[in-house]
Length: 504
Image (cartoon, rainbow, N blue to C red; front, side, top):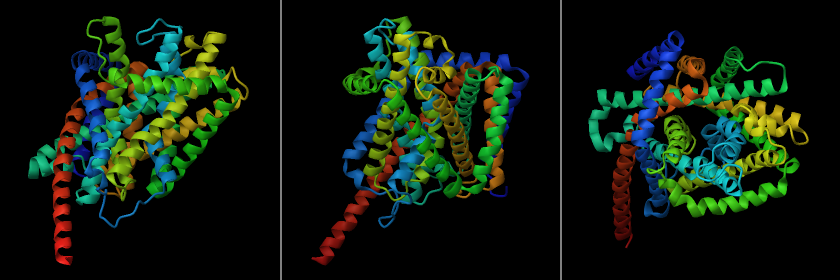
């Protein structure tokens, strides 16, 4: 614990205050976070849409600009992980539980219960459901992650700065980032990470409970969810103890095997032709309507505006809250890659896999709803299991899904404890085990308190509230990176010119 900084103690105090608050006065916590969430969604929805689309545009610019050749590291550095392991770690840390939780539930909800603009249950609603799912989980989501990861990786491996959010702002603010203002930036990043990960762990516990309720006589209750969180906490602490190269790597590869098995079996036993037709058709619709969806706010339609607040703004806030954790983790495993290689991989590969995932599970669920009905009446966390129940090997698929949620749960929490440890020990790439254990317990406690205080809605409220301040830091990070990489590129070109003149 000698390595910890003041960021550790300040953020720990804030997190413990939130945990105690939620334990003693859960309704009060839900009410206040709900009010904050509502205010941000209503008054700053335009802001979220603009900045997230701006992040994507900046990523695309960096890919095609001369800066794309710059390496995240020294010129001689090589990638630490091969492509297969790298993609597995990206996917496991970046989406994980959310893909299983929403894989069937979000498309069926948009189609049968609450379409973005079309009449529910129609062909137009079917097309819209997949198109907006791709929008929420595609390039925009990964653009948010890519920004934080790119900036951190560049400053850490190219310039030798500490792996801290505050250190990336030094080109703008100089030595001020070494003092109190830098601590404030890091505290905001750490707290956003805690809430973002706790939200996802809450979703995971709710869905494991939902699966058990669907398949067994067990009830859907907070007590069972608390037990699930406790068991998984012990498991991911064991994983965290083994270190990054062992625990997280093995679990990430296990996740990919299980996810691939679940996807492949569902694709085969489900409505295969319908899935592939929907995948092909809706990919085109997504690409065609991407600019419109990116800026859609519906100011003259209250119903559509509420939909955007509840879904698109929520997702953009979710990804922003997760971005310090995922960004730092992706940066940690991406040393030695060029900016172009890094951004192309982070933006495109996980997005494409996500599209196929949602097409497979979403189309399978929608087909059940069309043929038999009833699926849209299930609780969100039970929709995936209800879908499997209507296809061959349904029990096996449900068991694989619950194991996958568990391993994703462990991987996300494990990775987050590592990242939180880094951020509160001055960027150490080997944070003390005790620090990781403390953050593991805090994350799990926060997840339990949010579930206790208001279930899934409380998770969403806390998420949007925590993400808002970090979004401003992300904008500054983009400006800081551009200033730094431009200066480095000029210096590099001058060095090459001198070498050419000397050799001539």
